[in-house]
Length: 343
Image (cartoon, rainbow, N blue to C red; front, side, top):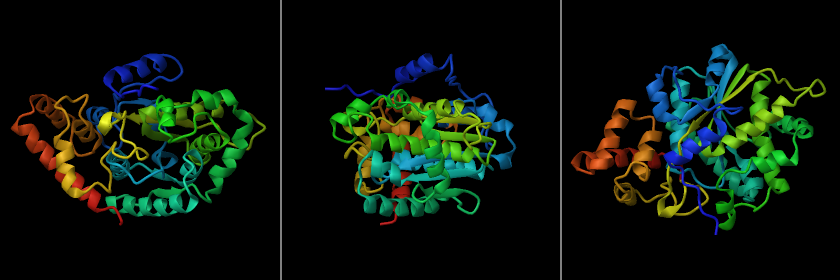
C-alpha cells in the first residue's frame, strides 16, 4: 500500500531543500502585496516563486489566477482560497478564478453534465462570498478558446517525460483509492496541458501572471514554466512575461487522509457538512498545531493577522478555555460560509 505524504513542516522543508536553491527558487515574503504586509503574507502562504517579478509589472498589466477542479463540492480549504483571492482583489489586484469543469471531466472522469452543473454553483458561490466579477474574472474552461488554442500550440514543446515529472506527491495514494488513473493517461495529460495553457493564455495580454495554488501542486507550475521556456519563433505565442507563483500550506485531512480533498468522502469539512457537526469536528482535532486541521484552517482563512495566529498557535498547545472559545468562534464563521452555498 502506498503511504500518504503528510503535509507537515518537514515536508515543506523537504520541498524547499529539493527545489529552492536551483531553478525553482521558493522563498518567503519579505515585501508586501495588495496592501498586505510580509508577516501577513507569510501567515497566508507558505512561499512564493518570483512574486517580486510579478510586482515589477504595472498593476493594469498583471493578474493573479487560481483554479479549482470540479470533482466535488468545495471543502473549506477551497473556500479559503476563494477568500484569499477576494482579499487580493480588494487590495487592487486583477484576479481570475478558473472553474475546472474540463479538468474534472478528463482528469477525474466525471460526467459532463455533473461538472457543468457544479461549475455553475461554484460560480454563484464565489460571487456570494464577495468576488467581484465586474473587475475580475470567474469562468469555466469550457468554450474558452484562448486557452484551448494555446494548449494545442503548446503541444509540440512538451515531452512525455514532462507529464511524468508533474505527478503530484500523493498520486499513488489517490490512484490506490480509485480516484485517478494510475498512469499519466491521455485524458490526464490533456487536463494538465489545459491548466498550463491557462497560464500561458494570460501571458498573451499581461506582463506578469501570479499563480496561486497549494504547495502540493507546485509541479504543475513548473511544467508550464519549462514548456514556456522552449517556445521559439515558430509558435504564435508570446513568452516574454513573468510566470510566477505563490503557494499555500495544506490542511491535514480527517481520518488519516493527507489533506482536505473534494474526492475523498470524510476527509474534509465541506459545504454539505451538517451544520450541527461543524463544532464537533473542529473541536475534536488534536491540540497540536501541526496535526490540527482546525488550526491549519485558521491559518488559511483571511480572518486572522500574523500576531493573532501566533496567539492561536500557543493556545492550541495549551488546549484551555481560550482555545475552546476561539474554536467556537471559528466554527460559527465556518457555518456562515457553508450557508452561502447555493443548494
